[in-house]
Each structure stands twice: as structure tokens, then as C-alpha cells.
Image (cartoon, rainbow, N blue to C red; front, top):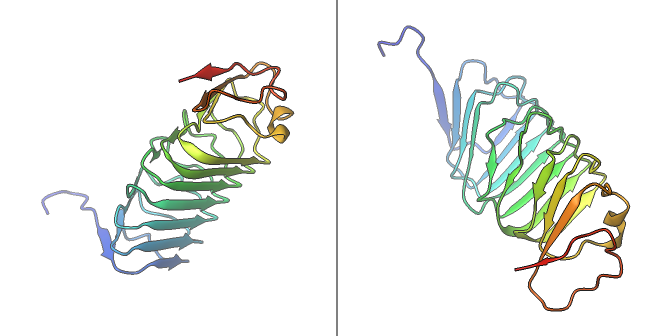
Length: 192
């Protein structure tokens, strides 16, 4: 109260934020299981979605967002967004889909373990990508040309072979003794 510039946070049970007027808030905390954010002109700098098991963010410029907190084991889909916060942490996310996003602000993409990760039409991937914690990995239309290291749980499908630069090191953390290496002439094999 004594601060010369007080901050205001909206704590709400609402789930859909479409063209929401967030200008008067410095923070947003959603207290429901699901949250959908679309076409909000200027998002607050602090967003807490730790109560949400499903998060959908569409067509947002996240330039003003400094902190985005997510719930452990949540499912998140971020579509056609830009300026994702550099400190965003997906390490506890169960399922993640980044579709048509520009990741130019991210020094690294922090991913953990889950069922699936989908990177569809993603631009400006960081040079090191570790998706070895996911059972299913979909990389469709993603620009992989700048990758220096790619870690996978199992051998990539054939379509990835042509997309990965020859200078990229690909590590496969296989759990089986037998792996078909016929398509992997440029890939280093490592067993754990």
C-alpha cells in the first residue's frame, strides 16, 4: 500500500480470456482447471496458471510477460505466439504443443518428461534441443537447420533425416538393445 506504484493482480475463476482488457492489471492468476487466452492486446507481466491442467494460448505477443507459471503435469498448447518469455519452464509439463511460434527470445527450450511434444512450424529453435523425455515427438515444418545437438528417446522417423543438418549431433537414448541403424548413417548412437 505504501508503494508509489502499486500493482494489481486479477485472481479469477474465469477460464476464457478473449479480447480481455488486461491493461489495468500487472498480474493474472486463474483458479480453474482450464484456461484459454486469445486476442488479448497486452497481457500482464505476471501470469500464474498453476491451477490449470489445460492451457491454450492463441495468437499472442507475449512481449510484456516476464513470468509465466505452469502447473506440474499440465497440457499446454501455444499457437502462433511470439516473444515467449526467456525463462519459461516446460520441464514439468506433461504434453506440449508449440504451433507456429517464434522462439527467437529463448536461449534454451526447457523441456522435461511426458507423453508427447509437438513442435509444428516453429521458427528459431535454440541450438540444443532435448526431447528425450517424451514418448512421442512430432517435428513438422520446424526449422531444424540451426540445431547443433538433438537428443531423442528413440530413433527418429525417416522424414527427419533430411531435415537435420549434417553438422548436428543426434543422441538417441534407446532403452532396447536392438536399434535399426539403416536410416541413421550420420547419427551417433548412445545407449543408457
